[in-house]
Amino acid sequence: MAEATGIHEPLLNEHGTSKNKDEPADKTCPASGKTGKRCAVENFKLPPPGTFTSHPGGQEHLKTAAQSECPALLFLAYHVGCDLDGRIARAVKANGIEMPDSGELFADVHALVTKVKEEHKNQHWVFVAWSLIITVGFFTILPWFLLRPGVASAITVSLLFEVYFLNIFHTRHHKGGKVYDIPWLDKLTAPLYEVVDNTWGYNPKAWWKNHHEYHHMSTNANCDPDMPAMYPLVRLFQAQERRWFHAAQTFYFPLLLPFSVARFPVESAFKHGGPKAYFVLWMVLMWIWPCAVHGWTGLYATLFAQGLTGVTLTSKFAVSHSHVDLVAHSTEADSLLTTKKTKMDAWMVNQIEESMSWGGYWMTVIFGGINMQIEHHMAPGLDPPLLWCMADGLKGICKKHKIRYTHEPSIFHAYSGLHRRMWVMGKP
Image 1: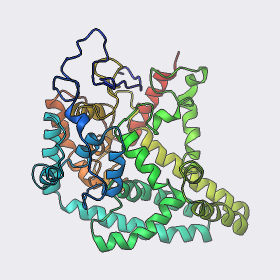
Image 2 (image 1 turned 90 degrees about the vertical axis):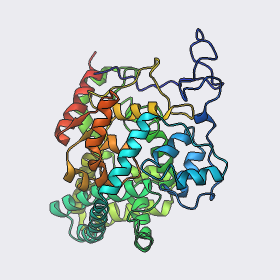
Image 3 (image 1 turned 90 degrees about the horizontal axis):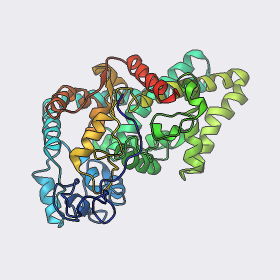
């Protein structure tokens, strides 16, 4: 396994000069390739909210990007495969904004995504149909579970929770609140999804910040709220201090998973500022009603359903960036902290080499593309089935640019890679 530090240092200090005091101050900037103290990537700024009425990530993404340390990277990531050289370039220029530097790797990925979107338009309807099935199933199965709690209803509602959050919640908030790209259908279903998202999930406003900026832009850095945030319980990076109990982390890690989903409504209300009414609704539906109406059977059923969802959902996120074969960029010259000084191509290399994909087409459709994590980080606004469609092309691009691409045939192989990394990082 390549060195795994999990601590990414900026290539430049706040004044734009080299971090190494022995290097000349006028050295070529590693962010834009230009000589001098300022970089085009650093200078990129978004206009005031409302300037652009249409955006692939929605107005909230524009706000998140404008307030972030990496507006250029977010801009390019959410416009890969879009009309960057035409309509978007004209809109940017009309508002007095300079297009941010990208690079050869970005150009190759951009061309690939453009081609995939054009050649596989039917995959959008696959995603629309699957999302509608999930929606109808969720609001059918949940009443069954509440009225007749048992093993069968608990397993079924757990599966519906999992595929809902992987397909609808995850994709919807990457696409600015749009799931179907059919205005009347998005408008019709939005109130239903708002209730589900806020009751069982993560306050969307906090999720936008934590997921888009901290996770997608700074994968495996200290600010990443995914696997790095599990320390000190779980150690996955060299820079994290090893504790005596980490020697057993590969064995006790599965015991942590059942609790991972039930904490979301609690954190949403009391940590992320979500409406308390949704927390009350969650308490009533998942705890008070089952116990008051069905007694011990209701309690066992809700514990089983939530625990099973925690295991199946969290395990799929856990394998995405913690495989034993992933390249974790060191704190030397190739390291990156995602800031507005980071070059797009360097960021893309970081994303590819610190992510992994697993499974095939049907796993991609069923589980909302969570298995195609490399492709998702290259094009976060794509419909999930298209991620599988771009995989072979992306492998070819990685070979061309000598970038490591990690893929496993199944979730079981991916989970094995995660536990091998835990073993390596836990042993003395």
